[in-house]
Length: 410
Ligand code: SF4
Ligand code: SF4
Image (cartoon, rainbow, N blue to C red):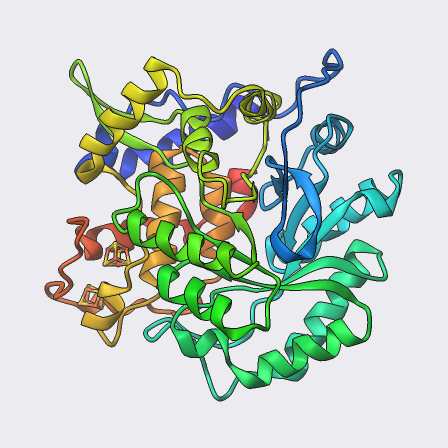
């Protein structure tokens, strides 16, 4: 399939979902400009700014790399050659293919100088309560960790994360703690961590109080409505010696430009804002283009916000109600017992309509197993989302992605 045809297909998909705010977006950030590979770039030596990851004592650049969307070998190599030392992976990213891809690249580097993180999602996760189920299959969890080592072709990782930690009970869920401890004792991970997408403040505090983990990875950005509470939780965790790695740090909003509703994002301002909190020790933005890499690395030159960046942050906050960013508050899951994993579906929606990144939306939607989706049979939605999302409309729109073969968006 040619690139032009692919772009047309993406446009076709998006143009059919004209409901609400999304339909009036300009196609400016659609990723059809072929920016994933620039080929031979001039070698740049960016200034690196380091922080110490809490009690682990590990010193690392404040910009690390998320790998969920990683597909360009040249890009990952350039990041490593530029001083990026820490790469976060997960066994479910492209069903282990990302781990294999990263594993092949790091073979050419000194393993001792690379900090590898991986997470394994326990099955099942109870989305409604933010806890893991009593039916959690710990043997599979351990097997998936072993598979991760095999995929990465390494004997150990530096950080092993338990993802989707939500309510307090999930941070101290003994069966999984036992598995993680076993893995650490066997020397297969240097440090243990927990990552949290929802009930984040509660999770971060519980992780800190448990005394079990070395690092915590909260979703953290300037647009989150509970950001003050999250900041207090992060400061609390750092005060207790935890290393703090922030994820979901860059988020866009939409606002009216002339007559158009446009998706707007200023990653540099967003990253600087996050990193101005010294208790955030590093961030793991997904980096898929050389432009993004350059922008993200340039943050380390100076964390001071320029007047334009401050203006962007202010305007973005004011436009927050038009934001596509799900707050992960879990209200929808509490209000509807039949709801699918709405926060993940809203994330897919933001990728598709906010960032115009359909492949990312497709990869995220793979975790939605409900078929059919209960929303399809609902006459009206009972959920009152604090972001004002029309849940039924958005769920039914984005779930259409499952009807297309993956190659359609490749
Ligand atoms: S969709 Fe709305 S109610 Fe549900 S988690 Fe996101 S912000 Fe909260
Ligand atoms: S549309 Fe129906 S099933 Fe879907 S979240 Fe709303 S109430 Fe629940």
